[in-house]
Length: 185
Image (cartoon, rainbow, N blue to C red; front, side, top):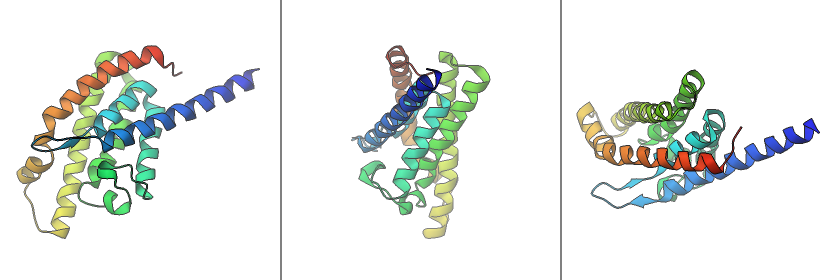
């Protein structure tokens, strides 16, 4: 009987991880047309980790990255492949996993309270911005020429701060509602 319950739980974990991997991919395909268009990738990452928890959520993000890396078009603009991951914006994609891992670490240290989730999302976004911007500057410099920090931030971070904060608020609201429906051990 206990083996049956463990098998059921592992199967359910795999289903949730797969479903939320797909959610991240779908969110990456949704582009909001503004002055600087943005996708819902970070929203997908935050909802995934917020609902599934750090371990399962991080696995979901890792699978998303691996699917994209092998060429399945799960990234923004229906793209995929190592060229995208190693390209100038690849650091932001890798930053999704760093965000998820940070959120997992905070969950382990401070628990699953709403304020912890909110803070972990904000700090996760910051980690994604930092890693992605450093990566962008290195790749851009190698391929095109030197670029200043303020220029890189102006292209890659500043236009996205407000939309990303809105995504965090929406992710928090959705996580609370989904937590009532989806019971993840």
